[in-house]
Every structure is written in C-alpha cells, then in structure tokens.
Image (cartoon, rainbow, N blue to C red; front, side):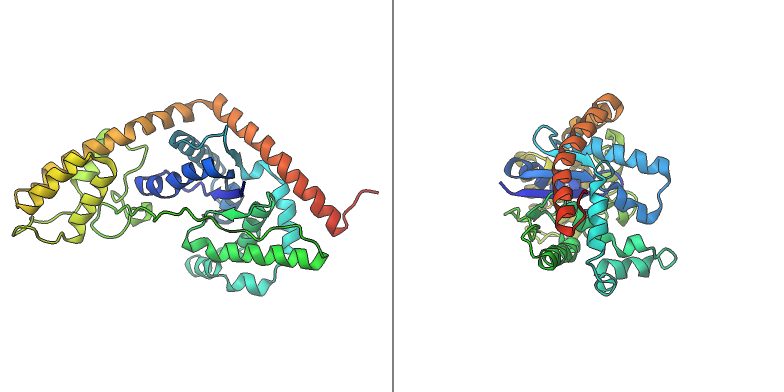
Length: 331
Ligand code: TRP
C-alpha cells in the first residue's frame, strides 16, 4: 500500500468548494492508501498568528475534517507540532538545500511580493519544512494542487540529494497522488469564478453556516433578468447557480429548473429558494456534527493523542535511521 502524507493548513472554515474538492478526495484516499493527515501549525507561524487564534483554528479545522468523515481509526490524524521529529529532519534537510533554489521558488517570490515587511527565514525554508513533513513518513504519494507542485518537486530534489550524498537508498521520491477523476468545479455566488473565502463576503457557503445565513447568501447570488427566448445558452452567473444545484439537489429539481429556463418561465427567486433549502439539507448534518465534535474536548484530545502516538512511532524510526546515516550515533 502507498504511504500518503497531506498537510492541512489551519486557515479558516471549510466551505462547499473545499468539501467537493479536497475533502471528498481525502475521504476516498483514506480507503486506498496508508494516509497521514496533519494540521500544519508550524507552517502557520510564518505569519505570526495570535497564540489564541492559532490554537482555536487548529481545533476548528480538526473538528471540521472529522465531521466530514476523516476517520482516525483508518488514517493517522495528528498535529504537526506533536511530531517534533519533523523539525529535526527539517534541520538535516536545511543543510542540503541551497539558498538560491529556495529564493527562486514561485511561492516564496509571491509571498515576499505580498508581504515585503515580513520576509523571514521560515518563509524561505517553508518548502524544506514541507519536505520534512513528507519524508518523515517516507511517503511515496502526496495529494497536491497546482500551487504545491513545485514544493513537491523540491521535496524530490532534497530526497535524491540526501540519498546521493550518503550513498543510500533511504528516501523515496514522492509524486503527486492521482485521484483518477476530474476535480469538481464549485462556483461561488458572485457570478464569477470559483468558491473561495478570499473572494469576498457572501461568495462562499461554509459548512458551519446556519440555515438563515445560507438563505441570505444564496438569495443575494448574482442572476439576471432571465432568458429572453427558448433554449438559450446560459450566462456564466446562471450556469453557476445550476452547477451548485447539481451538487446538492435531486435530479427532478434540476430538471424542473432546466425545463423552466428553456421555456422562459423560470423565476430565479424560486430557484434560489430551492437551492438554499437543498444546501441546508446537505450541510445541516455536517454542521451539527462540527458543533458536537468541537464541543467535545475529551474526544478531540483522544484523537490527537492517538494520532501523535501513531505518527511518532513511524517518525521516530525515520529519524533514528537518518541520524545513523548522517553519523550522529551514540557512543
Ligand atoms: N503547503 C501546503 C499548502 O499550502 C500544506 C502542507 C504543508 C503540505 N506540509 C505539507 C501538504 C505536506 C502536503 C504535504 O496547502
């Protein structure tokens, strides 16, 4: 079985776009591979979050992924900082990574462009820490989006360099996990591109959104005056509403609105009301589960402890061997 590592950044609440994208894929992946999922709290420190906020977001993201169905009985689910072996491997890999290649990384360049006042060394070595996350479990596969492909390539370079320098075949060269299906497109509510929290208030429907919040956001979604003739092509904003409906509504409902669009009797107010209802039916069980889990400190502590133990067992092995290879041996 393949070993997979995936890092989850604690950067806010999950929305439907995350659910039908990354989360859904994680749920499938955990059935097919030996998965290590961790909440990347060390990585968050590059932006100096307030300690209370950091702690709260780590808990929240954990509760949300658990509520969605990440199963700690099947996968290893842990907090990055509960596996400090990662930082030792990070140090070892830092000795093998070149300042030049780190400076050339696209994400580093973008980050210093956006935040010229906070160009810290942690930002520069972010890809090294990510490589340590992956190589600490000697993973062979990593589920990455486009924006993380370069980081994965750097991980392979560090792995190969380590093996070469010490004349060993210790670290595998991890490649992207292929889900074998096309990613589902989840548009936002503002009539433009995809659902995302940075696209502005009201563009995304979060898994913690209450019924009335969902309704308010959906009713404000961008539409137009309606079709002016039979069987027209749908404008982008309208196609978006249909796309969202295809995720949460029944086939009959979708067909009903397809027909009424085609014969020009459609009323977008009715369609949005229906969409809001169906979204709520879809989201409410997850939302209630998130509430239950995030209020259950005991359960969360148990999950995190079990995950840390499992991650530690494997991470410890890697570090012990790496130390030996490097020449850090006991007297
Ligand atoms: N850099 C990843 C992101 O921005 C998060 C991450 C950290 C990660 N370490 C990882 C992902 C290891 C996969 C494997 O989303």
